[in-house]
Amino acid sequence: MHTVLELLNLTTPFFEQKGIESARLNAELLLADVLKCKRLDLYLSFDKPVKDDEVDLFRSHVKRRGLREPLQYILGYVEFYGLTFSVNKNVLIPRQETEILIETVLNSIDKETHVNIMDIGTGSGIIAVALAKHLPNAEIIAVDKSPEALVVARLNADSHNVASKITYLQNDVLALSLPIAEKQDIIVSNPPYVSLNEFHTLQKEIVIHEPDFAITDFSDGLTFYRKIIASAKDYLKEKGRMYFELGAGQSVEVRSLFELHNFSAITITKDYSNIDRVIKGELK
Ligand code: GLN
Image 1 (cartoon, rainbow, N blue to C red):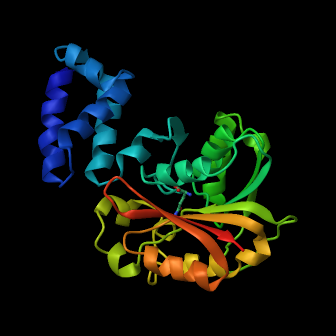
Image 2 (cartoon, rainbow, N blue to C red):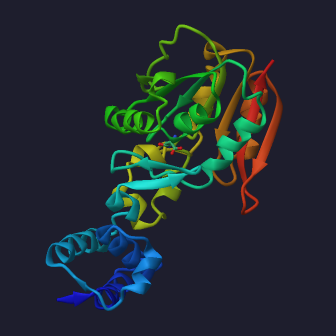
Protein backbone atom coordinates (compact mmCIF):
# COMPACT_ATOMS: atom_id res chain seq x y z
CA MET A 1 0.00 0.00 0.00
CA HIS A 2 1.28 3.46 -0.92
CA THR A 3 0.06 6.72 0.56
CA VAL A 4 -0.63 9.87 -1.44
CA LEU A 5 2.61 11.45 -0.22
CA GLU A 6 4.69 8.38 -1.02
CA LEU A 7 3.37 8.27 -4.58
CA LEU A 8 4.16 11.95 -5.08
CA ASN A 9 7.62 11.53 -3.60
CA LEU A 10 8.37 8.59 -5.85
CA THR A 11 7.06 10.22 -9.01
CA THR A 12 8.61 13.68 -8.71
CA PRO A 13 12.28 12.59 -9.09
CA PHE A 14 11.29 10.22 -11.91
CA PHE A 15 9.74 13.12 -13.83
CA GLU A 16 12.74 15.33 -13.07
CA GLN A 17 15.06 12.72 -14.44
CA LYS A 18 12.94 12.58 -17.62
CA GLY A 19 13.43 16.32 -18.08
CA ILE A 20 9.84 17.27 -17.33
CA GLU A 21 9.28 20.85 -16.20
CA SER A 22 7.32 21.35 -12.96
CA ALA A 23 7.76 17.69 -12.05
CA ARG A 24 5.98 17.83 -8.70
CA LEU A 25 3.02 19.76 -10.12
CA ASN A 26 2.65 17.19 -12.90
CA ALA A 27 2.66 14.35 -10.38
CA GLU A 28 0.04 16.13 -8.28
CA LEU A 29 -2.25 16.86 -11.21
CA LEU A 30 -2.12 13.27 -12.42
CA LEU A 31 -2.77 11.84 -8.96
CA ALA A 32 -5.62 14.28 -8.32
CA ASP A 33 -7.19 13.18 -11.60
CA VAL A 34 -6.97 9.51 -10.60
CA LEU A 35 -8.40 10.21 -7.14
CA LYS A 36 -11.06 12.52 -8.63
CA CYS A 37 -10.21 15.35 -6.28
CA LYS A 38 -8.75 18.84 -6.55
CA ARG A 39 -4.98 19.12 -6.53
CA LEU A 40 -4.96 21.07 -3.28
CA ASP A 41 -7.12 18.41 -1.61
CA LEU A 42 -4.13 16.06 -1.89
CA TYR A 43 -2.43 18.14 0.79
CA LEU A 44 -5.17 17.20 3.24
CA SER A 45 -4.79 13.49 2.52
CA PHE A 46 -1.03 12.89 2.36
CA ASP A 47 -1.28 9.92 4.73
CA LYS A 48 -4.24 8.34 2.99
CA PRO A 49 -3.53 4.94 1.46
CA VAL A 50 -4.28 4.78 -2.27
CA LYS A 51 -6.25 1.75 -3.51
CA ASP A 52 -4.53 -0.76 -5.79
CA ASP A 53 -6.61 -0.02 -8.87
CA GLU A 54 -5.98 3.70 -8.41
CA VAL A 55 -2.26 3.07 -8.05
CA ASP A 56 -2.36 1.06 -11.29
CA LEU A 57 -4.08 3.85 -13.17
CA PHE A 58 -1.69 6.43 -11.71
CA ARG A 59 1.29 4.28 -12.76
CA SER A 60 0.02 4.09 -16.32
CA HIS A 61 -0.44 7.89 -16.37
CA VAL A 62 3.07 8.35 -14.98
CA LYS A 63 4.51 6.03 -17.59
CA ARG A 64 2.86 8.02 -20.40
CA ARG A 65 4.02 11.35 -18.95
CA GLY A 66 7.52 9.88 -18.59
CA LEU A 67 7.48 9.36 -22.35
CA ARG A 68 6.84 13.12 -22.54
CA GLU A 69 3.22 12.80 -23.56
CA PRO A 70 1.59 16.14 -22.71
CA LEU A 71 -0.35 16.23 -19.46
CA GLN A 72 -3.45 17.48 -21.30
CA TYR A 73 -3.65 14.39 -23.52
CA ILE A 74 -3.41 12.13 -20.47
CA LEU A 75 -6.09 14.04 -18.58
CA GLY A 76 -8.13 14.34 -21.78
CA TYR A 77 -9.25 17.90 -21.22
CA VAL A 78 -8.00 21.46 -21.00
CA GLU A 79 -9.42 24.79 -19.86
CA PHE A 80 -9.69 27.52 -22.46
CA TYR A 81 -11.50 30.83 -22.20
CA GLY A 82 -13.25 29.64 -19.05
CA LEU A 83 -14.60 26.51 -20.76
CA THR A 84 -13.49 22.88 -20.54
CA PHE A 85 -12.55 21.22 -23.83
CA SER A 86 -11.80 17.61 -24.66
CA VAL A 87 -8.47 17.01 -26.36
CA ASN A 88 -6.60 14.02 -27.71
CA LYS A 89 -3.53 13.36 -29.83
CA ASN A 90 -5.39 14.32 -33.01
CA VAL A 91 -5.63 17.98 -32.06
CA LEU A 92 -3.35 20.79 -31.05
CA ILE A 93 -3.56 21.50 -27.32
CA PRO A 94 -5.18 24.92 -26.89
CA ARG A 95 -2.68 27.63 -25.90
CA GLN A 96 -3.47 30.58 -23.67
CA GLU A 97 -2.38 33.06 -26.36
CA THR A 98 -5.36 32.05 -28.44
CA GLU A 99 -7.62 33.66 -25.84
CA ILE A 100 -6.30 36.99 -27.15
CA LEU A 101 -7.60 36.07 -30.61
CA ILE A 102 -11.06 35.43 -29.13
CA GLU A 103 -10.96 38.69 -27.13
CA THR A 104 -9.91 40.68 -30.19
CA VAL A 105 -12.83 39.35 -32.22
CA LEU A 106 -15.36 39.86 -29.42
CA ASN A 107 -14.12 43.39 -28.62
CA SER A 108 -14.41 44.56 -32.20
CA ILE A 109 -17.97 43.53 -33.07
CA ASP A 110 -21.48 44.14 -31.83
CA LYS A 111 -22.29 40.92 -30.01
CA GLU A 112 -25.98 40.94 -30.86
CA THR A 113 -25.80 41.31 -34.64
CA HIS A 114 -26.08 38.39 -36.99
CA VAL A 115 -22.64 37.40 -38.31
CA ASN A 116 -21.25 34.64 -40.49
CA ILE A 117 -17.90 33.44 -39.24
CA MET A 118 -15.48 30.94 -40.71
CA ASP A 119 -12.80 29.37 -38.47
CA ILE A 120 -10.05 27.94 -40.66
CA GLY A 121 -8.08 25.09 -39.05
CA THR A 122 -10.49 24.63 -36.18
CA GLY A 123 -8.60 21.72 -34.55
CA SER A 124 -10.30 20.93 -31.24
CA GLY A 125 -12.85 23.61 -32.12
CA ILE A 126 -11.99 26.02 -29.31
CA ILE A 127 -12.30 29.16 -31.43
CA ALA A 128 -15.62 28.18 -33.01
CA VAL A 129 -17.10 27.09 -29.68
CA ALA A 130 -15.86 30.09 -27.67
CA LEU A 131 -17.24 32.49 -30.29
CA ALA A 132 -20.53 30.59 -30.54
CA LYS A 133 -20.90 30.82 -26.76
CA HIS A 134 -20.46 34.60 -26.74
CA LEU A 135 -22.22 35.57 -29.97
CA PRO A 136 -25.88 34.55 -29.75
CA ASN A 137 -26.55 35.31 -33.43
CA ALA A 138 -23.44 33.91 -35.04
CA GLU A 139 -23.48 31.23 -37.71
CA ILE A 140 -20.14 29.51 -37.85
CA ILE A 141 -18.35 27.30 -40.36
CA ALA A 142 -15.47 25.36 -38.84
CA VAL A 143 -12.97 23.99 -41.34
CA ASP A 144 -10.22 21.44 -40.82
CA LYS A 145 -8.39 19.07 -43.11
CA SER A 146 -8.27 16.36 -40.44
CA PRO A 147 -11.40 14.20 -40.03
CA GLU A 148 -10.07 13.05 -36.64
CA ALA A 149 -9.82 16.65 -35.46
CA LEU A 150 -13.38 17.31 -36.61
CA VAL A 151 -14.58 14.45 -34.40
CA VAL A 152 -13.10 16.28 -31.40
CA ALA A 153 -14.44 19.64 -32.58
CA ARG A 154 -17.97 18.24 -32.86
CA LEU A 155 -17.74 16.65 -29.44
CA ASN A 156 -16.73 19.99 -27.95
CA ALA A 157 -19.57 21.82 -29.68
CA ASP A 158 -22.03 19.23 -28.37
CA SER A 159 -20.77 19.44 -24.82
CA HIS A 160 -21.17 23.24 -24.87
CA ASN A 161 -24.61 23.14 -26.51
CA VAL A 162 -23.59 25.12 -29.58
CA ALA A 163 -23.66 22.35 -32.18
CA SER A 164 -26.66 23.89 -33.93
CA LYS A 165 -24.68 27.06 -34.64
CA ILE A 166 -21.65 25.39 -36.19
CA THR A 167 -21.27 23.64 -39.54
CA TYR A 168 -18.23 21.46 -40.06
CA LEU A 169 -16.32 21.23 -43.29
CA GLN A 170 -13.50 18.85 -44.00
CA ASN A 171 -11.19 20.67 -46.36
CA ASP A 172 -7.51 21.38 -46.88
CA VAL A 173 -7.36 25.11 -47.53
CA LEU A 174 -3.94 24.80 -49.11
CA ALA A 175 -5.10 22.25 -51.67
CA LEU A 176 -8.71 23.09 -52.50
CA SER A 177 -10.96 26.06 -52.63
CA LEU A 178 -13.62 26.09 -49.95
CA PRO A 179 -17.13 25.10 -51.04
CA ILE A 180 -19.10 27.74 -49.17
CA ALA A 181 -22.44 29.15 -50.33
CA GLU A 182 -22.14 32.58 -48.83
CA LYS A 183 -19.32 35.05 -48.31
CA GLN A 184 -18.47 35.59 -44.66
CA ASP A 185 -18.45 38.62 -42.36
CA ILE A 186 -15.50 37.28 -40.43
CA ILE A 187 -12.69 34.83 -41.01
CA VAL A 188 -10.64 33.77 -38.04
CA SER A 189 -7.68 31.41 -37.94
CA ASN A 190 -4.92 30.18 -35.70
CA PRO A 191 -2.93 28.44 -38.42
CA PRO A 192 0.16 26.20 -38.07
CA TYR A 193 2.64 29.07 -38.06
CA VAL A 194 5.84 27.55 -36.67
CA SER A 195 8.60 27.34 -39.29
CA LEU A 196 10.17 23.95 -39.91
CA ASN A 197 13.51 25.15 -38.50
CA GLU A 198 11.89 26.31 -35.28
CA PHE A 199 9.74 23.20 -35.03
CA HIS A 200 12.82 21.04 -34.48
CA THR A 201 13.82 23.16 -31.48
CA LEU A 202 10.54 22.76 -29.58
CA GLN A 203 9.97 20.61 -26.49
CA LYS A 204 9.60 16.85 -26.90
CA GLU A 205 5.99 17.03 -25.77
CA ILE A 206 5.19 19.04 -28.89
CA VAL A 207 7.50 17.43 -31.44
CA ILE A 208 6.75 13.82 -30.55
CA HIS A 209 3.13 14.00 -29.49
CA GLU A 210 1.17 16.90 -30.97
CA PRO A 211 0.04 16.60 -34.61
CA ASP A 212 2.91 18.18 -36.57
CA PHE A 213 0.60 19.54 -39.27
CA ALA A 214 -1.23 21.59 -36.63
CA ILE A 215 2.01 23.23 -35.49
CA THR A 216 4.12 23.82 -38.60
CA ASP A 217 3.63 24.46 -42.32
CA PHE A 218 6.92 22.56 -42.93
CA SER A 219 8.26 25.75 -44.53
CA ASP A 220 8.83 29.32 -43.33
CA GLY A 221 5.70 29.50 -41.13
CA LEU A 222 3.85 31.94 -43.40
CA THR A 223 2.24 29.54 -45.90
CA PHE A 224 -1.26 29.71 -44.43
CA TYR A 225 -1.26 33.51 -44.13
CA ARG A 226 -0.22 33.81 -47.78
CA LYS A 227 -2.84 31.39 -49.01
CA ILE A 228 -5.77 32.57 -46.87
CA ILE A 229 -5.11 36.28 -47.38
CA ALA A 230 -4.63 35.87 -51.14
CA SER A 231 -7.97 34.09 -51.49
CA ALA A 232 -9.81 36.35 -49.02
CA LYS A 233 -11.91 38.09 -51.66
CA ASP A 234 -13.50 34.75 -52.60
CA TYR A 235 -14.67 34.08 -49.03
CA LEU A 236 -15.03 37.44 -47.36
CA LYS A 237 -17.72 40.08 -47.87
CA GLU A 238 -16.75 43.65 -48.66
CA LYS A 239 -15.75 45.24 -45.34
CA GLY A 240 -15.46 41.73 -43.94
CA ARG A 241 -12.76 41.20 -41.34
CA MET A 242 -9.99 38.69 -41.01
CA TYR A 243 -8.29 37.82 -37.72
CA PHE A 244 -5.18 35.71 -37.30
CA GLU A 245 -3.08 34.53 -34.42
CA LEU A 246 0.58 35.20 -35.19
CA GLY A 247 3.84 33.52 -34.30
CA ALA A 248 6.55 35.67 -32.71
CA GLY A 249 8.14 37.96 -35.27
CA GLN A 250 5.55 37.47 -38.03
CA SER A 251 3.52 40.67 -37.71
CA VAL A 252 5.48 42.77 -40.21
CA GLU A 253 5.21 40.19 -42.97
CA VAL A 254 1.55 39.42 -42.36
CA ARG A 255 0.74 43.12 -42.29
CA SER A 256 2.39 43.51 -45.72
CA LEU A 257 0.35 40.60 -47.02
CA PHE A 258 -2.81 42.29 -45.80
CA GLU A 259 -1.81 45.57 -47.47
CA LEU A 260 -0.94 43.83 -50.71
CA HIS A 261 -4.37 42.19 -50.85
CA ASN A 262 -6.51 45.23 -50.29
CA PHE A 263 -7.00 45.15 -46.54
CA SER A 264 -7.10 48.29 -44.40
CA ALA A 265 -7.85 49.21 -40.77
CA ILE A 266 -5.12 46.79 -39.74
CA THR A 267 -4.63 46.44 -36.00
CA ILE A 268 -2.22 44.36 -33.97
CA THR A 269 -2.76 43.12 -30.42
CA LYS A 270 0.12 42.10 -28.19
CA ASP A 271 0.16 39.18 -25.78
CA TYR A 272 1.24 39.26 -22.13
CA SER A 273 4.89 38.85 -23.15
CA ASN A 274 4.59 41.93 -25.37
CA ILE A 275 4.74 39.86 -28.57
CA ASP A 276 2.54 40.87 -31.52
CA ARG A 277 0.05 38.02 -31.24
CA VAL A 278 -3.10 38.87 -33.17
CA ILE A 279 -3.62 40.79 -36.40
CA LYS A 280 -6.89 42.06 -37.77
CA GLY A 281 -7.62 43.54 -41.20
CA GLU A 282 -10.71 44.73 -43.03
CA LEU A 283 -11.28 44.10 -46.72
CA LYS A 284 -11.76 47.41 -48.54
N1 GLN B 1 -7.79 26.48 -33.97
C1 GLN B 1 -7.21 25.53 -33.09
C2 GLN B 1 -6.59 26.23 -31.91
O1 GLN B 1 -6.45 27.42 -31.89
C3 GLN B 1 -6.19 24.67 -33.81
C4 GLN B 1 -5.07 25.45 -34.36
C5 GLN B 1 -4.09 24.57 -35.11
O2 GLN B 1 -4.28 23.34 -35.26
N2 GLN B 1 -3.05 25.19 -35.61
O3 GLN B 1 -6.22 25.60 -30.96
